Length: 331
Image (cartoon, rainbow, N blue to C red; front, side, top):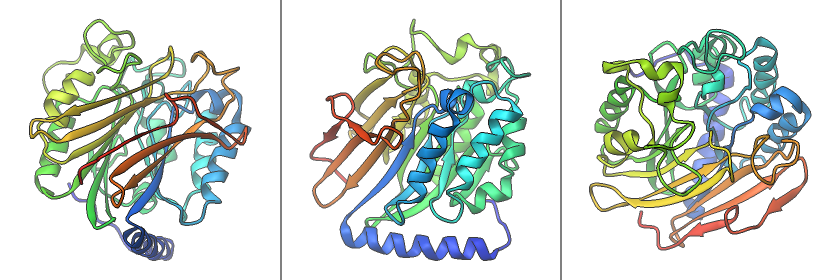
């Protein structure tokens, strides 16, 4: 459902800022945005790292067109952690639009119950729907009165874009909602963010992989509520749509990173990336590194470049799995 809401002074200021940013991006032929990997460790144990991340983004002026969070915003889905999470995103209000994909740690019947049920009440309490819409360029949500799944629209580098943020283990009915919305926007390029999609061996999260959505409590659902892993999402949503372009996810430990380029049903390349820098990921000391991803889409040079930066450590990770680019990208 397309969501409508009353214009507020803050929204008009945000809209004016976005118009100027979009004109700038069109002139430059490129745009940048931030992908925030799982912040659960920071919100739980190192809030100063998380708040530094968010303040750094806010301080960048009109550099970034938007911010995408891939899920596991919190560790224990508790009021205390959501309070910290909200404080961080509030720094972006009126400055940079943001989009939230809820992870398995962002839902459940109680703190410490990770996706035993699809209870996202705290996320919706701390990010009320009207407020979320006014800060995220959102045109539709599912369910219509909740932030669990959302779609935003942008006009950048002479292209129209839809940015989807989808729940952990997107249900069949969620995928149907997204497909119907894409069908109404046949010329828009598609960016999808969801918590569990790519594995750390550069393949889709499916089969016998660890951390499958089906292994959690929500995985027992059937019919329209049946959950989908990376393989299911590819077959039902990503591949069947001509203009799918980018997919981002987190969730997976081990190396915490991965990348995959695949052709969809129409022969168009889809660029898919995993990034996770939480505690227990190899090479992340104490989980307080504060790394995030900076994505640059450059139509003029036909590239998508990825850099990994920590505002907390004030340093880049320059190993090939953390800093890379895709060449000869077709727009």
